[in-house]
Amino acid sequence: MSSRRPGALTAAQEQRPLGSIDAPEHIVSGITTDQRLAALEGLRGYAAFLVFLVHAFGLLALLLFIINLDRYSVWIDRDPIRILLILLSRSHYGVDLFFVLSGLLMADLAVRRWPGVVKFLRRRWLRIYPAYAVSLIAAAVFLWPDRTYSAVDALGNAALLQGIFVLGIREINPPTWSLSFEAVFYLAVPMAASAWAGGRRVPGPIALVTTFVAIVVTAALLPVQGGIQFAYFALFVPGIALGLLDQAARETLARRVPLAVVLLAWAGFTLARKLELISILAPAYYFCSGVACGLLVLKACDTQGLLARAFASPLLRWLGRYSYSFFLVQYVVINRWGGWLGDRMSPSHRTAFAVLFLAGSLAFSLAAARLLYAITERFYFRRR
Picture 1 (tube, helix red, strand yellow):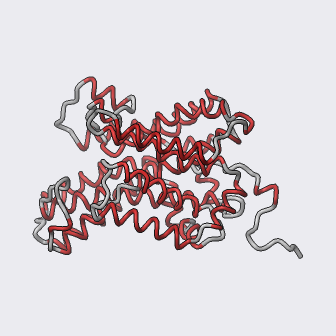
Picture 2 (cartoon, rainbow, N blue to C red):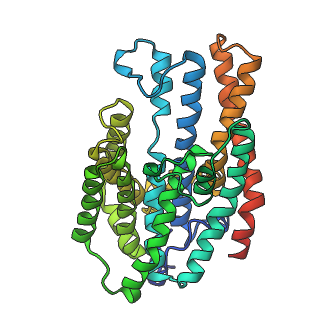
């Protein structure tokens, strides 16, 4: 009889590279050496659902109460329904989780499985751009049929520059601003892979913390409106720190961090954002997000832990499989469905309207994501 505990990994398995959380085939085939991937894939599903909450509940609050979301404050309202809708809509940190997860995956790839610059960039393009291009066309056709875009706006969106806010490019599919940050990060990965070749010159904790602080401080000091949002680049750093660890060290560290600490950090950060105690225009937001998101991703690497098992649940893993397509189409679907429903049903019937709006938004977004995945993503995973 084996003396190894159930679910434990052999020494060879513990040194195995992370693999790709882009590859759902690894997830649906069972949870053995892929337990880590299952939890991270489920975490992607959770992050995508948070993005959905932002747009679905934000639009619902607007349709039911004609709220100015930019100026609304929960501290001066007395209507519990309005407050609840706004609190649910303030879930913008789903994108933060995506950045940390990307940092982990790319660092692991750069240190342990580097395929070469050309192959890396080709794979990233095939993974990201086809689905993005189709969603961009869908947004232009179905979301803004009467809007005319300048050549700068069209080319800027085609080149994934719409998220670089200081350029003033109008977004055709608003949630895709984050892909601008992802694209810049991907372009930097080959330089890091070259510097870390063979495990040499891998930065330590002090260097990574210094890098994080330097990015946030530099963004805060930029003399341009909205320059602080360049601090989103700092959120790749906690993921990089985790990706530089081998799997055994990462899981050991995850087990040493108490679950209560992770949950308190996550709850504290998310509540502070919802209750207007921190703003994305303040440097403190990025420090808090880096800690909270980094801990959540780390704890998801504890395959024997309660949190990892929750993220590895079939529902979240299924959503994680289609998370990228879901992220791309949900804004278009939510707004089209909300407009169609609003033309045919009075928002004064608040409960019925809210139920139909939310149920339709989620169901149609999932269906559209499944279709987009089949058209633009499935071939990538089959090639892999």
